[in-house]
Amino acid sequence: MPLSLAPADPRHRSWMGSALEAAERTRAGGDVPIGAVVVGPDGSVLGTGWNQREELGDPTAHAEVQAIRAAAAATGAWRLEGCTLVVTLEPCAMCAGASVLARIPRVVFGAWDGKAGASGSVFDVLREPRLNHWTEVFPGVREEECAHLLREFFVTRRAGPANTA
Image (spheres, rainbow, N blue to C red):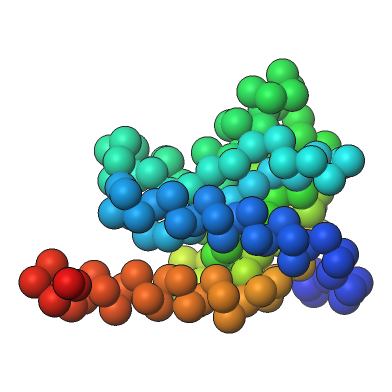
């Protein structure tokens, strides 16, 4: 299935700002700066997440999973129908699968992930026709800002601790 040809909702840019703010919270834990929010049908943020794999020692502590868990806790329901997942980097297979299982009908993301993306680049879990739920995808929202945050992190990491001062 092709990517959505519908124009992005003007609110997507604003919501991506919240995801970018969440990504900044990874600095203390030293994780890859990825942030996510789950936005409810009324436009309010129901859950916020950021990568916490290093901080928690948990390989499933991706930003999207953290945001989905927080939104499910806030709503008291595992079905997040009518919600939108907004994330700074294209979701991986695990995170795309989690959003499908949570019945999230829309995913908005910033930067593409040409190595592990599962929302249209390497794989397309979100629109896999054999699954029972499909997702509308809005890629490239504030793409340069999202990509810049990631590039900056990896340049600093490759430079090593002695060269970061």
